[in-house]
Image 1 (spheres, one colour):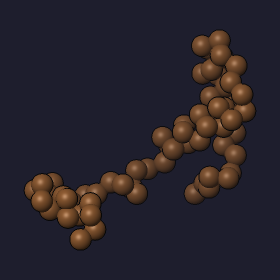
Image 2 (image 1 turned 120 degrees about the vertical axis):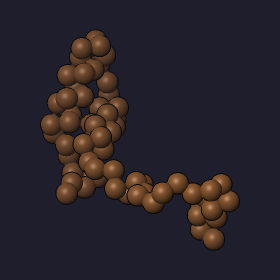
Image 3 (image 1 turned 180 degrees about the horizontal axis):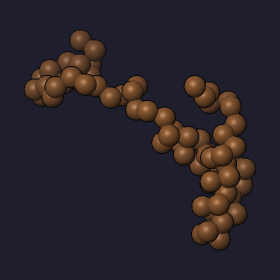
Length: 67
């Protein structure tokens, strides 16, 4: 599993290519942010995905309030 501090060279190359197609030369911060966001798209969504069935409005509010 990759970490946030680990450089994503494949994603950096992809971001550079996408920016170059749009004739845009980003600075290093924008390039790293784009690569990080591309890496996030690659990872499975398990942190926020909740397999429970939909709740009524009151139950949803209680869950969001951690009551």
